[in-house]
Length: 369
Image (cartoon, rainbow, N blue to C red):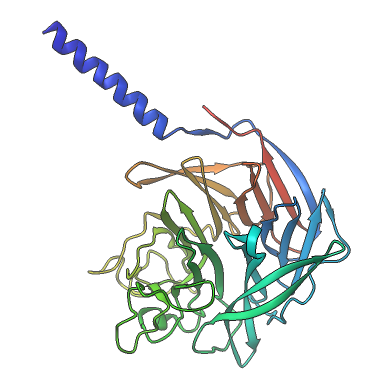
């Protein structure tokens, strides 16, 4: 009996140590922040270059260059014209996984005019000439169909999968929410394409008659975040008045909008009587009232979610079986609407605040406990 009890005890200790090693928690109580740059106008996203420069998109159609804490007088030139109205404008920026060899970047933005506009994704070569950057070899690799009216719900977040294919969130266009359930259009979808705009042959609806072959998942509203961690694709999206969500995205799945939601319309009316329905995915996290999630980063076994309405950063702990628990607000000295978050090349977190006086802020001093 003593031997059996000891063996069981040792196994329990070893299992506990193993789980602890797999799920190391991050201590966020003791940290400091450094303002890298200020006076950014309506910034939306940022990207790090191998030489240490940081690119920041501004919705008005500019890409600013930050070098050693200073915003250069000359930004990136030859940026395509964007439709800058409402929630539209220049949105996400991402360098290709093979950027060191091909100098390719991707930009998403609102394309068109008031009577007809859409989310567009381009690829371009980022060239440097005497420390001045410019885009060349610009190629339109995706434009959402059909064109819509109204300058809302473009989404536009980009992510790259391990096979090199690209994911792009496309919002429901606000006034077109019913289209999120239909496969003959791109509204309210996540699309997946190759770097040249071609469609991967294993996309879930590529063989379905009448369906857009680029669709990877559907039933989304306004999803401004994608994060990939340990091979899992995480997404969050704005609900209407409440019903903000965090989801794990799998190809072909229907995430329910507007048939199911935990939110209500902005006027208080019921969007739908259903919060669940057969064949539609339930969110892993729901925020009601709304926090207005704007971006997300996977870092040290947690998702860090920025928000606009709540003006906060939240930590969501991810367990081994992809259960997600909201740990509440962290980094509360960072004030204002927080637009974007990322893990920098120095393995620290960086955030962009929103507005006419946006800032790029580095979060220092995080440690594993």
